Amino acid sequence: MLAAMPPPASSPSASGENSPRTRGDACPGSLRLHRADDGALARVRLPGGIVTAEQADVLGELAGRLGEGDIHLTSRGNAQLRALPADCGGELALRLGESGLLPSARHERVRNLVASPLSGLDGLGHADVGPWLAELDALLCASERAVSLSGRFLFALDDGRGDVDALGADVTLLAQDNGDALLRVGAAADAVRVPGARAAHAALVAAETFLDSAPDAGTWRIAELPQGPDALLAQVVRKLGAPLAPAPVPPHEAAAPAPGVVTGHTAALVVGAPLGRITAAQWRLLADTARRAGDNTLRLTPWRGVVVPGVAPERAAALLAALSAAGLITGPDSPWSGVGACIGRPGCAKSLSDVRALAGAAVGPVGALPVYWSGCARRCGHPHGDRVDVVATPEGHEVSVVRGESRTAPVVVASPALPAAVAAARA
Image 1: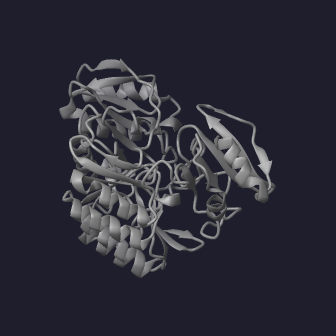
Image 2: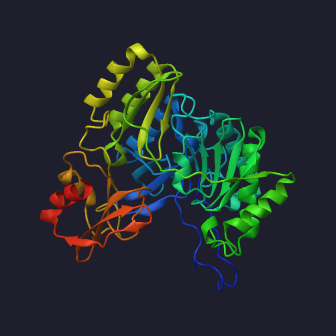
Image 3: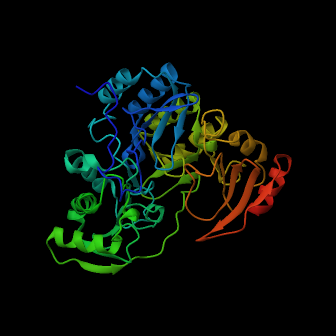
């Protein structure tokens, strides 16, 4: 039976002297709820962002009956329910378990797997990573060692187009045109080529090797290892027990699928959610669209969007028009394209500003750069890649431009001048 109470937080090392942190990983999940200013928050892991229409119904029902009613998308393709009562953990766990959204209570926070959202749909990748995704999730849930991974450790399964490869995952599988995969660990200088049939196993070995190499429980991600990712990769190769060919890491940029109709092996719809928030009515429409499409699934993306696969080409335009009428982003000309924000006030106690209201007041012509609004210097959920960065501070809102590894000097802008300053920076 699924646990009704949140599991205890992982403890730091006994001495604490070498640990970069003094407390356990408090990353929220479905069983460990986060106490926010607007109530409890549950983060439901959806490996690859995949959810069936029936599972989407369950999430919508729980969000409406227990919380505020909306579904919030995360930068890892997961779903969050907000404004929940503090005592709803037992009911939440039971319903999620019955629907198949909680296959392992002990592993629910470590099922952090992102995958190329259009894999197998548009014919642009080298392989459909769906089989790797299903196998890795099953291996992860069967691994006793993997229970110790932090809720921040991330796997990425890229079909070769380079979209999720650029998200800075801890362990990445990058499909090759001959059926093999490149295995990457963190920001190691090289990758190793593994047979496609062993790809999911190799990814799990990499994660378990990281745990064996971490100096203490306060080391949550590969970038924090004192010995660095290259040394870890050498250990992984030895554990796999076979000669694996080294390969250079190709440069990639994180790129969200463009909203609209996608054609290829099949038709699909790509939509965005303004500020990553999907209303109850929009969520029901998406689930119904998935049922009408025939594939019966939705794919949530790391860019806070949704892909509806399996659409009949002759019905795609009409279905997309209905989603547009419901307020979702269905084309590049939407003023909401490229606009993102953290939850801000009043939902977060650490936020210094209602950045969502400010972002809404500043939407306008689509800019060349995306913009992300953060209520404090933590920049929760900020995207990778070039962008305009707006951060609330005690002195005002700092605006800077991020390009690659460089950032312009931040300029403090008063609230009335923010729309013009952000538009100029995006252009």
